[in-house]
Image (cartoon, rainbow, N blue to C red; front, side, top):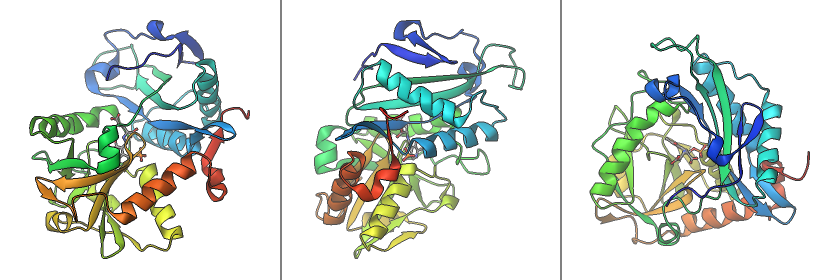
Amino acid sequence: MPLEKTRYIWMNGKLVPWDEAKIHILTHALHYGSGVFEGVRCYLTPQGPAVFRLEEHLQRLFNSAETYHMKIPYTLQELAGAVKELIKANGLRECYIRPIAYRGYGEMGLSPLTSPVEVAIAAWPWGVYLGEEGLKNGVRATVSSYRRIASDALPLKAKATGQYLNSILAKVEALNRGYHEAIMLDSRGFVAEGPGENIFIVKHGRLQTPPEEAGILLGITRDSVMRIAENLHYTVEEKDITQQMLREADEAFFTGTAAEVTPIREVDRQPIGTGKPGPITVRLQREFKEIVQGKNPEYRCWLSFVEET
Ligand code: PPE
């Protein structure tokens, strides 16, 4: 699906028309992957559009930037304001938001330190990441032949553009094999995550998800789902998951800002559980949807309302 254009993109403090949001071909980040980014979603609630866990996403952006020695020349509050301003200026109600900080045009060579840190935020309507059908009936996934980058090679807690080459290879391999999505193993052979999602399994009513040591991005949706599940009195364990545990799971699902809560119905032609989204997955999916749509007052603190300044 091609990008759905909106009117403006926020670039270095200014709203610029979508088609004019351009960079130089010798931008450092284009050559070396020296950028950090976020994916955030805004949903329509009865009180107008609200951004889900905006502060946490921006905090992760600042943490990722710090890992890569980048000083973002704005405060977190300024970027939060920019996100809301952009949504309003574009007249959006539900959208995906992509803040990015990157090393711009300055010098070539591997040291990024003399290149400027540029910041941009785009927002556009981005529908269901793995397809409507996948969200409803579950996606088909394959265990990738590409291992997740080892956490002693790149700090995977940071969400950096360069590390997505690893995800791209896994994604394309999965599509070529006829699946919707890949599941990547960590360097030790345990289940890590999808190319752009975290993963959970359900066994005997308990939820399990790989721990930080599996070299995963500590997803904000992962954290949200863990907290929602605990509040519903499910046991949630962060522990290593073997391929066998995955195949023998009663239920499995992906979580992510783009993917939201997407059931996995099959792994390498083997159905997970009954081959249909399981009851706990469906319950968490429903609960998550109500929360992001502002229908559950208990979780109001996770929403930043666009109309409020
Ligand atoms: N792991 C990876 C590797 C990842 O990229 C994401 C988000 C997650 C886990 C889930 O994190 P969170 O969004 O905080 O729950 N992937 C983003 C980019 C997807 C894309 O295709 O681009 C996203 O979902 O916005």
